[in-house]
Amino acid sequence: EDKVVQSPLSLVVHEGDTVTLNCSYEVTNFRSLLWYKQEKKAPTFLFMLTSSGIEKKSGRLSSILDKKELSSILNITATQTGDSAIYLCAVEASQNYGGSQGNLIFGKGTKLSVKP
Amino acid sequence: NAGVTQTPKFRVLKTGQSMTLLCAQDMNHEYMYWYRQDPGMGLRLIHYSVGEGTTAKGEVPDGYNVSRLKKQNFLLGLESAAPSQTSVYFCASRRQAKSYEQYFGPGTRLTVT
Image (cartoon, one colour):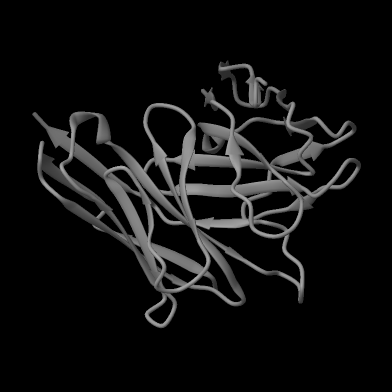
């Protein structure tokens, strides 16, 4: 059965700290791994990773995929209170040869709380 | 562009009542999805559609039906609501094929008493 596991499930840090969130997966026919940030409402897209070892970066956030280890990390440097959210990891797997329904398998998320 | 919108934002139902949640997108996306999110469970796929007139079951389809009569709309129906269907429901859409991110609507909070 395909699954995505995130750790830790929750994390409390202080402003200025650096955090690393983990995501591991077991899926057949992996296509891509996505990170989303969810504050009070809809998840918003952060990164999509398809190639191993290539870092995606946006401001203080960065992410990298390790296909050999079937995992990804999301790093946030110099955290701010506005980074407080649930961070969701999702994996897209091909259901048919050469095709994909684009279905995502989500992990349970990591709840990050940044204290002033 | 409004992106993905959902109607209603909140709803309270009594056990056995029925209702329909509406999802609309103005991005001309082929694929649309309905998820439910429960505390500590992440997002779970209920049903999805890969184009107008098509629907398919996801991970947790029981108790729900869907229809995609128009490309921009994806409806989620509960025929006989149960307390176990108390959840936050999210709709999402994405472009066809390859790997593109899904865009999410703001969610509908449904309580079944």
